Length: 144
Image (cartoon, rainbow, N blue to C red; front, side, top):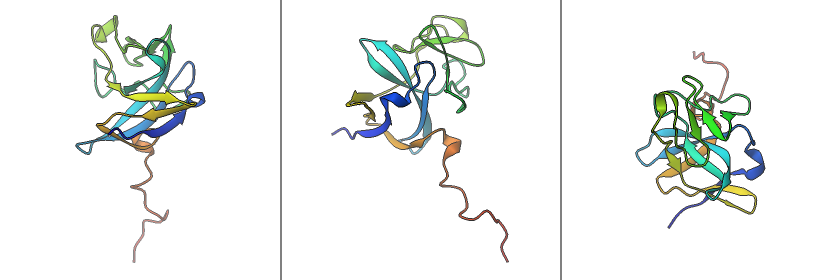
């Protein structure tokens, strides 16, 4: 049975940009995911893991502003300029040509975007570094 977790409202996803959130994979690793607008048969919103296929340590959405840079219906890698189609994830140019972003299963229903990917568990909005779980409960790090 697929667990559905509401991660955002459709209105939270910018028309030219992305919405960033963090998930945990079955193996325990955390990954970032971006939601982007897509206006074709794939649905109004698509979800992709937040890294370029040319260099997996290169984030597409760096967690600032409206998220990933978008151009002509595609997500732009900020390092090399490769453009991934926001609906299919496929890149036909630049250093990432011939590759496809890693898809994350989501559903859109009643104005909400739901994570439905069996291999992932929703953690929090924003990037991995935005997780406050590892922060001390006090601003003082002194002990006596």
